[in-house]
Image (cartoon, rainbow, N blue to C red; front, side, top):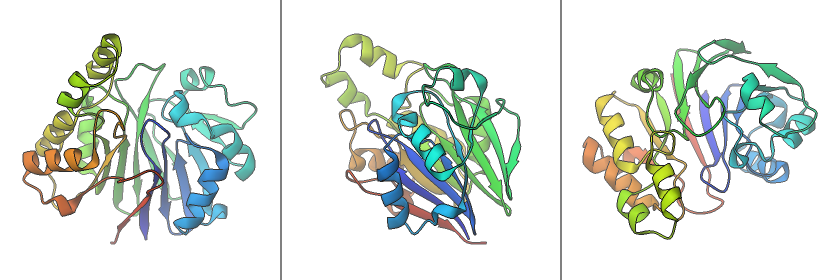
Length: 253
């Protein structure tokens, strides 16, 4: 069984676990280690299955729990040198990776892909295992060619749908922050996400809208935008609905 567990997604923290049978990797740890342990138990993830923590970039909502998780589970942190040097995660086992340089953890082949975000060297991760493919791509102002190519192949796409353009424009953020969010090194809007999904349509792809802003978006708006623009039923487009919500996406072969 190939499973993608979304434990947290949004500006308050991000954490996803990808599991193949008794092997698992974690992508980002932007919430506390204690909370991650509780959510793993809730989703039925055996802590002993966890082999590595992969970090996309150094922003606090992606790394605040990284050091404690690495030390508690005695697992290495995989990220590129620029990200690690900008991350204050203390003493951990660091495995340096390179953007577009594939590597294996157990039975999983993982490729770090370049994203476009205001960070040192941000990555998305494309995970292939047992003929199944998952993409985790958030915190990007636009889809790079490499990420869009992976989106075409993915059986499960955890993809950013951060903000509704009208809500951002009319919302409380200062102008400089609105401009940064809407820029090519900011975040992906609902419309931009939906357009990318439409360009890369694939039968039976499971779509999870990630990193929704609690100020400039709403689950219903994000899902409705994606459904309306792609022609897919809302039933096939998922996201977290409320604080503390989690999701397990199963891909059967």
